[in-house]
Image (tube, rainbow over the protein chains, first blue to last red):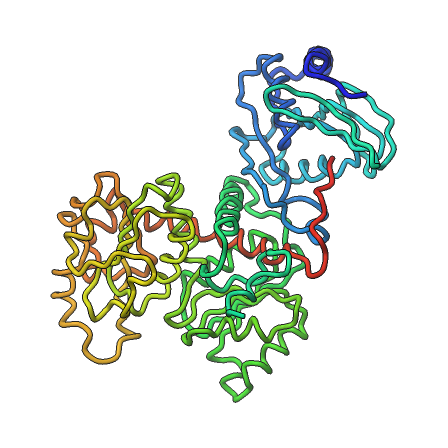
Length: 169
Length: 329
């Protein structure tokens, strides 16, 4: 089930193609791309390069928008969010590594809307796995995985991307 | 057990923020890093994050301070907390209610945090020792003792301009004796590993045995400024002085006021800081305060991000609950 760097790069090639088609179907000419820290930024950097986008890549850390702050507190390694463009009236491709519950994407959407009102937002993820808790789905997904709730998918990087699946002992 | 230990819970998380003394480098760096992330919130159209929604923060200012109170209030509001400003002069303590009775009443109103400024050293510690366990206390200045959020916003400003602390020579000039800011800065600079910390001032305005805090003492400003990377000017605190510690403001300015000529003795890229409010023509010349090396107004904006960081860390800590691994996706 684990996937090494070579295979990840091939999956990213396919994702970039599919994303290009989706953007064309929707008539989006100049999308803005935003990666969610940390794994989402690694995936976004590669898609951004493959699509040859002119605008700089945006980065989002959703720690201040999480819904579990009152349960687990402040994450000690928060990185600054940086959206070096106006989101107003623009089409956005939001990128994350793994879509599971959908809570991270919910938080990211809230944060994006505090920067402005985008025309539309698409979601691209490397792994779309089972376990949704919110009505959120990916427009483009590199891999689909059926996993038990205890199993965890982990993306390692940033130089070479590799996916590993951890099961509790 | 020292006073400082009540700042941390059993897991070593920040429970109150009362002093920079007794905190680890890791904790201070965590505050600075988190503040860096909060600084990006001001780029948002909606300058707010929902982190402290539903929390109530009370500003308890027994001593006036427009700037500090305003930046604490803005910080809390940018975190979506509700803020209550209790004006002590007109509150029940003026009617003879004891401080502890007032605190217990505020606790009964389900407040989550007290931000305390008081003229007596140790006031914030006293309050922290007596509040209910779920309440966090932040010291916004107590007597001559400490002003830790001011010191941390100064560290944040220095780090943004100079990168790391080890190569730096930092000169703190003026009324060290009455300055809780200087005391908190010296502790923070030493924990963060600043290369050399100097204090410059007349004997009457330097506390005895200040060398024990690991600083170099200068009575002559010119010698002390030589080669400094950071020059921190302190306000002459007339209101805290008893008796004749000083000749006159003019003579003080002659000896210890920062003028463009004296600033040239520091490194060419030295930054000039001041915790405010500034006394123009007493400790600092207007040409310096408004000049290109001054970062005084930047300190004020950085104060919001740093106070957001401290509030989020204190209220994001959970009594009894282990910090679990962040849930993914």
